[in-house]
Structures are given as structure tokens and as C-alpha cells.
Image (cartoon, rainbow, N blue to C red; front, side):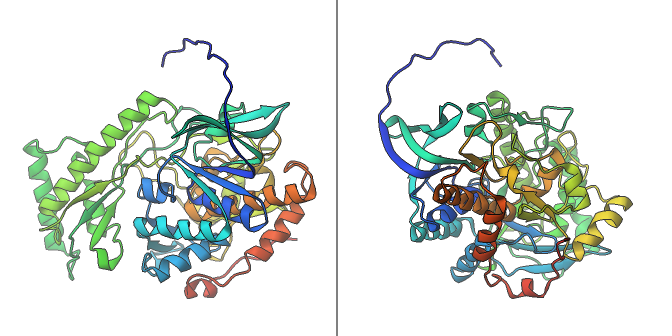
Length: 478
């Protein structure tokens, strides 16, 4: 990238409005944060770059719901899931025992219905919304966040706020203000592969699939097509990965829609903070999706009349900035399933690092030590805590963060980045913002115990799926 600089001329900005809490980013974390703050009496504004809420669930078509033991489904997630169930917008939550110690809970949502559910939840909580707001940067006064400057449809405007929550995923707002952050995997500037998710419509799952004859026929068709030069994308030409996805029939969406969703795409060695590299990733990922979908529609059983429905509006991004907080969730916390006395959210998902340098290496390290040390505990309801200090920005007062950009190690983030945990950190950030206002203190000085007590009350709800009530939850250590 060009490293030349220029001086931006100073100018006066019109103040659009003033709020108690401004939440930047309308994804799972941001929506949960805004709802929690508003329900606790804070006048709250949620600003979002797109014309709808839902974030990665919608824009990146991350429609899958995944958990290993269900203990990471907390608070507002249950309300969100219940409303989706009422709207026929989510599959039943299924428990799959995949052999040995591996257990998974899985479902899928209808991304279109997600927009409406978040609209309703936010509206009923009293959250004010601004869509099509881009490039929010923090307004600082003596190291204290006092608002954001945003590019709106009316032009560049200032919006004043007493508490700011960065739920942008990329940690853009906090980073622009000088909050430190980590990127990459500790060696490379890239952390994980990116994925262009796509959907195929008008599919009919064969009753007897997979079977040996059909699998061999599919493999032969792929060999022949690659030899003829019909496909050049590595996710197709490396063959085994594509065949595995088709054989496993991943991911089947809601039955009434007769669609499958694919996360087969892998775009490697991408610096997500480099605008040129990120643009390259979008184009490369879209071509991967086109070629994979073409083969599936032409050759996969049940897809004889299928067609490529869409690709995600934005390529799926698993990791970019990990902001610095006054505490950090370490990789050791995640591996050893450590608890914290000030834990404001739980994570129990796998250490799910999608390799940034390989099309075929698995995302989860399933060696013997991993299973014996971690997965047996997870199956019994264990988890690791995300401490309060990991959502409080380092160096700037009245600034909180939520979602995948919280203060965490590379591998810890690979576990806590999934959507229900993002919602939980968002709910905690919203509660902390409102309580700190009520108590006349900063989030940094706020006693974590009062946040935990309020969260415990707010999250005392019936599970969205009956099966969750039957699963074990590990007791906290004294």
C-alpha cells in the first residue's frame, strides 16, 4: 500500500444528535449491545453500514448455528432464536454425536428473517437506528470517548454519546482512535482463510445419499471435468474437499426453501486490513463459489434442476483486529477452559482456525491431546470465560467493544468468534454502558460484580429449544 500521507483540512461539523450510548455495527454483537443498553434506560443509537441488521448472518450468509454443548447460548440469543422459530426462520436444533468425544449442536437460520427479527427486537427495546452510516471514527476529549464522526446520507456528521461500543467486527472505531490491536497468527499478517459463502436453490436431497455407487460416479465426473480444464479454482481441482462437502450434504437450510449453503470456498493469505488485498479476496472467492456451484448443479445428485441462488454480499471474514482491552482472553484460557470470577460470557466452541495457507488442512486440530484434554470436558458442559476487562478498551475511557474484536489471543478468538458468543459479549457491553451511566462512573472503574449480577437476572430465561434444558452445564469453581 502507498505510505505517503497528506494533511486533512480541519472543518466544522454539524452535530446530528446526542445519545447516552452509541453502538457501531448492527451485527449479532451490536444488536445485542444496543438492546441491552436501551432496556436499562439508556437512550441508545445503533449505527450500521448496511440497510438492514444482522451483520455477518445476513451480509456474509453465515446462516449456520453451531455449538458443542449449548452452554454458550445465553440471554438475548434465546429471545432471538424463539422469534425466529415463531417466524419459521430457524431449523430445529439437532444434537449430532459424531463418534468418540465429539458432539455438535447444529441448526440454520433464514438470513432474510433475521433482518425482521432484529428490527422487531430493537424497536421494542426503544433502540434508535441509523442505516447507511460508514466510517465512524471516535470523537476524543482528553482520552475520553465523547461521540463518533460518521459519513451519513447527509454528509459527514458528528453524533455525540456518553458511551461508545465498537461492535464493527473489525474494531475499526477503536483502532482509528489509537486503541492497540493484534492481527494475524503471530507470524503472518493473515490469521485465517476467508470464505465466499453461496447458496444453491431448487435442490432435493436423495433419500439414499450417500451411497458407494453415487460417490464413485461423482468422483469420476470431477476427475474428467478437471482433466478437460473446465475448472481451475483450487477448491475444485483439489477435489477431495469438494467431494467431502457434497457427500456430507452441507449445509441444508430450512426445509421449505429447498436450498443448501456451502462454505467450501477458501481464499488464502489475505490481509483483511489491506483494501487491495481484501478486494482481491472478494473477486477470488466469488470465482471459487461460481466454479464449485457449477459442478454441484451439473453433477451432484438431487441438484439436477438446481441453480446458484446467490453469493454473500461480503466475503466471510473470521478474524481481523483483536483490540487491546484492560484484560485479555488468552489462548491458554481457551485451551484449558479456564473460568474467571468476572466472566461476562461463555465460549465452548472448538479452536476453529481455518488455515490461511492451505486449501485442505482441517480447521480444527483433532489430535489425541486436543480430544483428551478439552473435548471430553466440553462434552460434560465445560467452557471458558470471557472476562469483563476484555470488552473494556485500553487507554480510552467510556469505550467498550463486543464481538470478535474483543481483547483475545489468536486461537481464543477462533473459538469465541461464533455468533452466540458475540451476542453474549454484546449484551454484556450494553449492560455495562448503561450501568456505568447510572452509577456515574466509567466502564473501566465499574465493579464487574454489578455487571455480572445484572446479566444473571437478564439471562434467567427459558431456553429457546427444549433440548438445551437437558444438556449439562459445568459448575463454576469457587
